[in-house]
Image 1 (tube, one colour):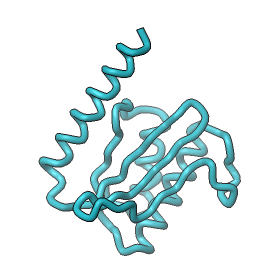
Image 2 (cartoon, one colour):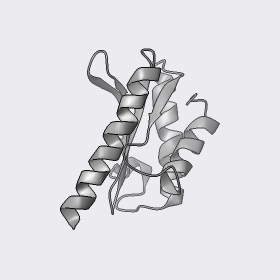
Image 3 (tube, one colour):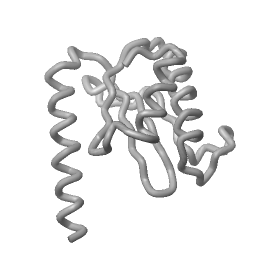
Image 4 (cartoon, helix red, strand yellow):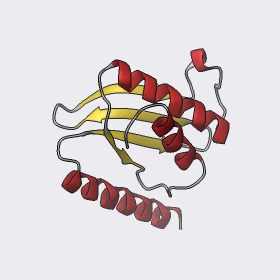
Length: 119
């Protein structure tokens, strides 16, 4: 049963990524990953194959180590927006992976939008 769930998750994430590749027009990608204990966000330039900015709930400087809730997602959204803006990135495409756009994923995206990042 778990292998079936994993296959469906990978299928969803590839479907989302392929749609983004068709419509991104060379923009950077804000990729989100959520595990049961942590949340991770990266701004990736696919042309160069490099991560330009990243943030995670494991960073001690944010003070949210080991937490995984909507408040943490909001804090990470603010932080990834500020780090991307420092690098000169103002517009990205949102890659939710195989996750539903709901709850923590939505909170992170909304916080990034509110802090100047155009998704």
